[in-house]
Length: 173
Image 1 (cartoon, one colour):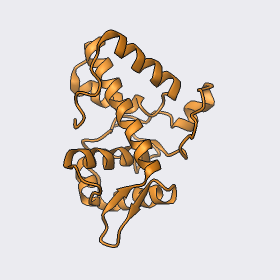
Image 2 (cartoon, one colour):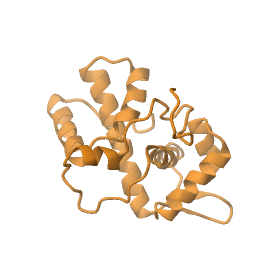
Image 3 (tube, helix red, strand yellow):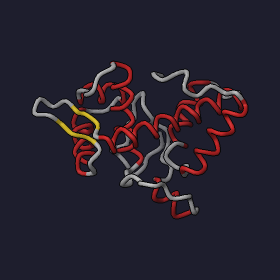
């Protein structure tokens, strides 16, 4: 990973490639079709934390997760997770009970599910349509998911459907 000013960016098994523009930066470069209820923008790093919470919830079929599990998935310190969780709480995407377990709010669920679906669609496109190695595709999908507008994502999903590429077959990995 090259050095960047975003030292809080997860650097473990989660998304850990070089920095791409945030959704806000990407939006400034293009005119994406606005969403009906656009989420409050997050940095790429915070989107990765939100997505990690969602992935763990799916994998464990649980409504809440422990911060230590997020730290383990992303290969970061628990302190980094706690800082990100605080930001996600401030944006209204997560709640944390007094025992420290983190649960997604309804807006958090929608945002995280959209990120994870985008990630899986990009990974499917890169591996199935372009023949990219799955490990490389996973890392690159993680970078790309942060920059695409909803319109571009909708077009990619429509393309994959027309081509018969399965996107939702692999929910956990």
